[in-house]
Image 1 (spheres, rainbow, N blue to C red):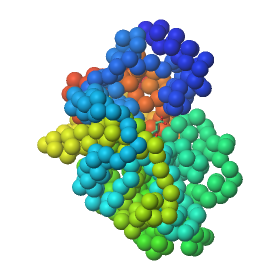
Image 2 (cartoon, helix red, strand yellow):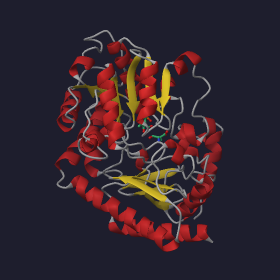
Image 3 (tube, rainbow, N blue to C red):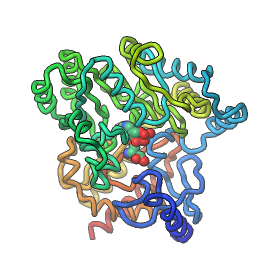
Image 4 (cartoon, rainbow, N blue to C red):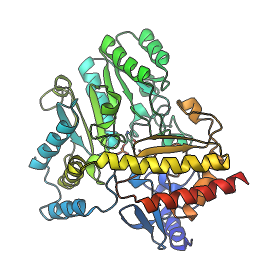
Length: 431
Ligand SMILES: Cc1ncc(COP(=O)(O)O)c(C=O)c1O
Ligand SMILES: N[C@H](C=O)CCC(=O)O
């Protein structure tokens, strides 16, 4: 593959944009090489400005569950744009998406739209603090909830990839209000509740993680969190920015059988346009301005273009027969192919997958269930696998600490080609 145009474009971008990118994970910093600059995408494929085509497992980091440029979504955006991009006044589209989200996720009595996942988690935490009159929040090592100060403590995703899980710029006061527990380790949470009686406003977590790679919670852990929050009158926040409408029609909470007090959304509910939302129990949501005293606002919140793309996407997920079963079948066949490759080659690795989210961990361990397990992965081996995959036309997330995403547009041929490319890469790494 030739990357001449992308190399030139990256060089130019670095003169004007810090690191040449508008979000660190895009820079390929931890895997090396030059990120392809993307010209266009359709279905399961993206094409760079040199004309190289890839089977895409990043899917804009999760939103593109229907595949890229789905004709219905494109049409909805075009038609809505023709009526005006934004008014700073209410529209019926905002109520329409709220009704849809409520229908699909029974824990949501009320929902407020914002512009990103970061805004959603930041606002949900403020609301939980306002509701409980407490300051502290428990988050889990390796979970990522966007780039708000309170959550950039032992954070996953790009913060972990670039070695800044505790970034400079977060004040000691803010860091002091964030307590850290270990994922899948209930006693680590119990200890914090014992040490901080009546002080903890919220527990926030990715109910199935993606930002340290995919980790599935033990049922005993997730049930225990619900119980601890009930006993201590603490708000349980499920951050479903990534898992929302990805894992199931009713999100990860449906799969796990747990009702959180608040849920945050993003990604899929905007159909690829900038969006976020948070919602939950009536009694808590009633605390929000203008009804209640907790302030939160946004010039472009509920933007018509994002609403139109989101509504169209959610409707398709809701109405397409067997949507999630088909996605599961495609995803299971990818997992099976990769597992067979590893078995045949005697290749060390663990695949964690839930529905269309997956991570291949480059580890000698038998399972990956915690942040400590994730940290044992061989990131150099991952980087080499990543580079070979890219050369073979497979576009993976450029970090071991991320999830891969499969869309409804991925075909049997895509999966077959991916499994073959993976076999070649694994074989080379064994030599
Ligand atoms: C679980 C989770 N929460 C929050 C965020 C922040 O969302 P955004 O990047 O839209 O601000 C992300 C992704 O970045 C995420 O995966
Ligand atoms: N893991 C992050 C979101 O889910 C990656 C997106 C980003 O930081 O740009």
